[in-house]
Length: 338
Image 1 (cartoon, one colour):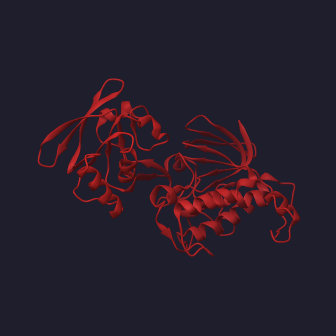
Image 2: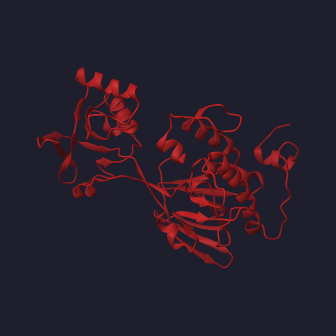
Image 3: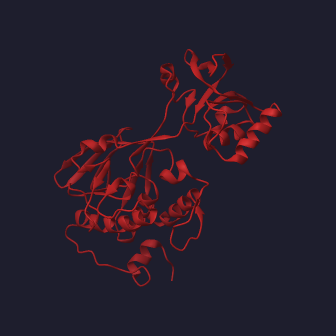
């Protein structure tokens, strides 16, 4: 059982900044996220796209913002639990006991839901046989690219992830890139690079094709693809990768007794607490009058939610507001040397 002050659900920008704000006031936290890395929508949807509305930062990418937020919370040694989704939640005396999909267990005083618009789950192949190969020879994200060295990979998709990985893996593997349309939704420079590699025989590009079936016993051996006009091809494949974007799901949150309004969680505007004591919601997943879905707004919500957690984590103490510029205690927590 992991015992800490606060559990943050969601490792996107607002969740990461909440961890910073908790650390500033002397509370410990751990973070759970359904994705395999921190960053939330910033990393999954626009890692290389510029963001222009972060205060004092004229322009940065989603990846740069995430890296800076991770750097900012280093002094607090926040523990991450990735590839985990919160499944069970129950009140035990005055604390919350939480269980994840990977059987991680937490005992916490308060919870901050910073799950964007819910947990991210990959859009999957509609072909039923694909399920038995998931996690062994069929993947929707890449953790270790070295397993593909000197293998034949069939990549499905037409966005940035599919294009980028087709280009990257063509250096060490034989790559088939299959897309259901003639046009692509990824960066034009990547589209041109893929076409150049196809012309040079360094990868095989198939447009207007979709998967019809996947063939194999314990390991994928080949895939059958079908053209819009009916023609089929059988491609030898050791691995299959699918990059079709993400689906946002509220999931088990729906069962926690929270006030849900159009797939968002209703909160107050004093500290962004929900109707359930000790559970807070910030970022895109929360709703209140005048709500703006901006990262900037999420940072503000996270700062107040962190302070709202204090009365649950330290019921016998009074929280004093402190400026980091003058508070020696806050500076010590940050590891600032004077």
